[in-house]
Amino acid sequence: MSSPPHTVLPWIVRRTRLPLLSLRCVDCRSESATTGEGRFRVNANRKLLDVWLLVRCVSCDRTSKLTVHERTPVSSFDPAELDGYHANDPELVASRLDPLLARRNRFTLDWKGAWRLDTPSAWLDEAWPVQVEVVFENPVPLRPERLIAQGLGLSRNEVLRRIKCDVPLRRPTSSGFTFTVMAGD
Ligand SMILES: [Zn+2]
Image (cartoon, rainbow, N blue to C red):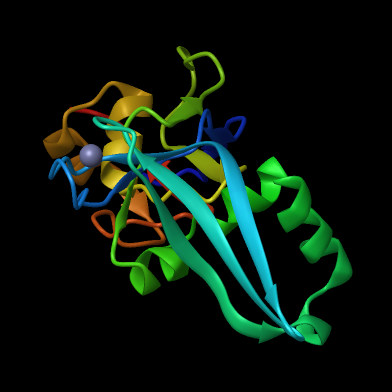
């Protein structure tokens, strides 16, 4: 018997704070750094700009600089973006803390405790199967398997057994996807 899936309200993933950075401190060897509120430093040399994002070791407070732009012609910047660097715009800080910056500066982003999943109240009397759309309000990289287990209160094994998903369950994603929950035993 196969009835079409019943659709419920979407699940929403939201950033609750900026992620920490897994970045080894050259002084104390701690491996965690923070951007705090987020501060850029802009340095002009003739018509070229360097832009850095300042981070600080969570153990010893040592400050270091991550390269955002290196000797980049002023004329190639969007004026609004440049204003954002000068004003330490929080949204710009958040959007610059991305995998590209991480690769260039050899750190990884630690999203533990920096996001939450908002789900509508659990469905009780719905007929199976149920279809759920996951929406990312912020691009937090998460494994669908883990997200679904958390959202439904299921074990990972149950997730693997009962979920049909349009993306690989074990590969982290930060873009929306849809999955279907099949009836349990
Ligand atoms: Zn340190």
